[in-house]
Image 1 (cartoon, one colour):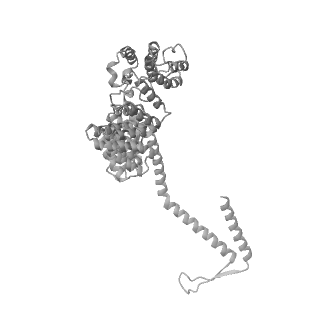
Image 2 (image 1 turned 45 degrees about the vertical axis):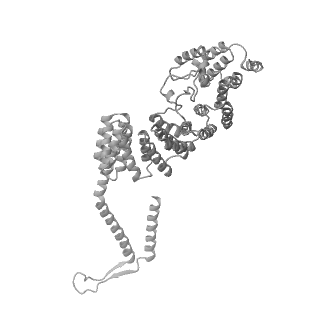
Image 3 (image 1 turned 120 degrees about the vertical axis):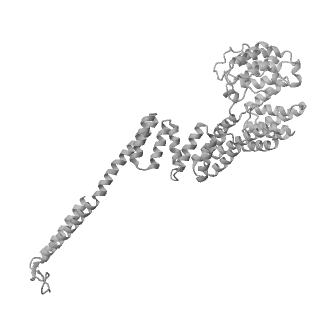
Length: 512
């Protein structure tokens, strides 16, 4: 504002200076050459000061008149824009109230405010979007779907309608519809992240493993998903398809996919176990052993040890020890490797070596797991300490359950996954690298292995003394019937010598 005042004052000063410089002595004569008519007048004489002042005032008058004319010309538009601004503000308020009412679950208010917003906005497309969002927020999915369906008729809102429909269909279980809408949207716009996510989830939920893998490939190319997550997800999808082909008796294609899954994620034990099983069906135990050894080095898993032992059935003891040694070298310090060695010594009826391995594991915590307690009980039984064996069995009944598989059935499937389990694995293992345990998640009764599980099958009929030990195991099995991990082992500590002292005495004891 100050600069405008200064400019006006400067202009006035300049005019005043000019008028003073001209003075009033010099006259300006105005005459006309016309001899008749309107333009005939006698010569007029005025001072230059008056002429300059009249010119300035005339110019200012013309500027004022022109400004007044423009103001009158623009008045209707300004009035209209003012009314429009107030209308727009009311529409925004109605939109805000509609969305807030939907978030609060007030269906009636959300519908009412959405209708007010639609009438004030004056845009059918935007009004539908607001109405759909308000209905969806308030849980009125039927009304939301109606609005999303209407959006498909306009190219401007078609993608929004497809997104709303696809997500509603996925939530309500209409998987074919969700796949159709999201796939069409993804083809039209490969950069639409929502379309990739919805399409992939719908295909996985519909157990379309091959189609989901193709969608995953497209998503990785567009960087919709991280490489590690994509790699693990693809491994699960290949393993799931391999499992389906295996159930149908197509062992060749199933093996190819299972091996591919193992190469993508060597730490994914279910793929390795399935590939080893398929190799065994094709009479190629050597390839199966190498595959298990590779996975064991990445992530030792008790299910892999069972698969490995299955491959050694019928082999002589020398070959069994050689292959077991090769497996142990892959992860010699891993906890599962130590447990595998302890179980192997128990099978060979060498309880002293088994106890030497178990002793440090049992001392690692005040609450050893039920699996370790059972192995300790079996070791005590083989060492002719039935009282201590029973105490370990009592502790096993209430001991914490291990995070990994600890109740595998040696004669059954390690990973008896249903299509629903594979579906969950795509995201649990794919996103975090975490496996799921169907028996644990379904709250199935815990299975506690008995001594017979660690005994060679050829010697099983001669185990007459095993009955006395298996009976407490059945009691423990009845005790642990539900999911849970109690912190208190629930049994008094074993009386007598310290574990280290007992180990020393056992090592010094001559074998009978």
